[in-house]
Length: 379
Image 1 (cartoon, one colour):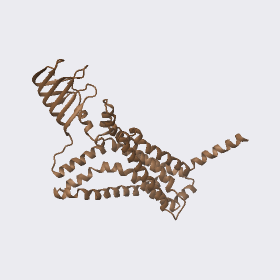
Image 2 (cartoon, helix red, strand yellow):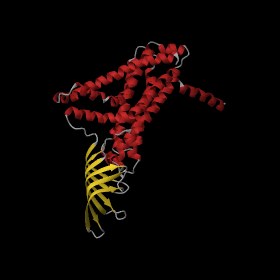
Image 3 (cartoon, helix red, strand yellow):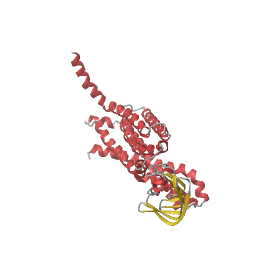
Image 4 (cartoon, one colour):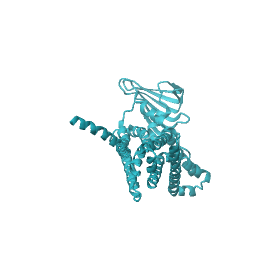
């Protein structure tokens, strides 16, 4: 690592860590006013309060990392511009483009860490926060138990009604299963089971009553202690997937739910698809904000340091507003999910790249390469 890279890295680390820690404490103070009543009324021990805020860290880090990096960049670049350090580096043969490489690589590391958080830690953190709050309030954890579950298989048309589904124990209680005829799609059988256990890819129905319907409408009832229902292959995770919030699902669970089985309703799938593409798009905020910081914070003006800062804050504000508004349209099936997640990234990315190219001189290089050729052609 060269001296200039080490200098830029060490200059960036302190404000970056300061911004991260400051945002964490600001969020804790804000959230404490919201949950202070729960802590006092339930006499929550300090251990649970500490756990409640520690489990939120992956989710909070996902939000504040690109913003913290952006503010740290603005601080470092504005200081280096104010004290003419950038001018000194350029006088020594180090171009602004070369200085930008180190900062750009750091933005890619921040984005990579966000992808890592999105894969598993952030979704699970959301559920852990809810479980910890239930523990503080003395309520049982509902992370793996779902009530009043209704599921229809898109392929076979089999409809499930379950009073309770426990995903952790792979068990369902008070189950009613409607099995349609393959050709007529009318109900051919109805199975009532006191309990159902999912083992090795199929369901075992316990204490069952089977009601069969013939073509004339006559019924036949049969009580059976246990049925190995090899025609029922849907897993408990698939049954309750649509009941979970997309933000609570890990990336692998979300991908399996979206692409693993056909889904009849595009409107119902819109929030899941939007969340899926949002996790691909959001970490790209760090490289995009890096482009704007170089383009707007690097200046030769020593007196007016506030103007570039206000411009950068305006860009950040507009980007976040546009992103959230676009995601709302995607969740409501107003626009395609991929467009909802990526259109703010694409628009601001192109604008930031243009401003960055103008600042480092790429545009002038292209102009000077084009103008002589045009002059020669005219001659």
